[in-house]
Image (cartoon, rainbow, N blue to C red; front, side):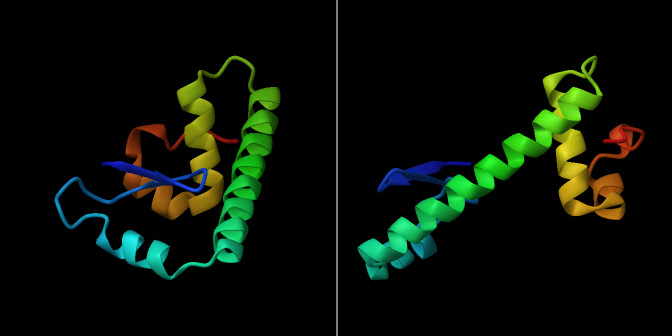
Length: 95
């Protein structure tokens, strides 16, 4: 998985081949400065919400590792069914 950076925003691409970032680059070319500012704001708010969620999980379960806290956060975001299919060994983690 590659990472592209522009305008203070990093975006992980789905692959590392020559065409992996084309949709992202097309979007970048069409975006105005206002669009990029809004995107940066959305990313900042998302990061803040994820950090708050993980802090709350860590507060309830101080004995958990960072990986366990992150997995519990993922479970909250995607739901039990999807999480159980993606992470069958971690199903017992209750945030």
